[in-house]
Image (cartoon, rainbow, N blue to C red; front, side):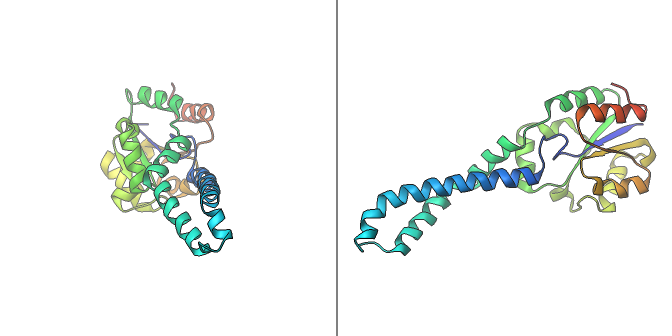
Length: 197
């Protein structure tokens, strides 16, 4: 083996987008509840006396929520939910001494920006981010592109992903694939390909 390619969400990052979405929904629900209670307290007497309308109340709720729930709020939830797998990053640093270590990730511009800012991507070359290359896993094109960047045959590459549906095409192309479940299981799977840590 000469190259090892990692996925980000669910592998290098401890959670998947589904967990991020759930955390975001919970956080938004808490913000909405807090905002509604605050405005109900503030406008309640005027509403009951007919001096303010329900529409006034709803407009104020919308205005307050648009101030609270924006990119800054989203970033905070992302960083809280999508924590780095520090143990695996230590393994990556070791592997880089002996192999090409790359990243293939389906992600949006904002997520890529956050991960670049926190230094996650600095450990990988090549770095293929779906929003930057115009391909998403499991399209064959993303795997062809990584082989071109590595100048290696698929048979000399290991691809690691937590989603089994992302492993079928690279397997058919000759990649050694690992369905990631946890760090210990990954080390055992890598050892079977001759990569020992």
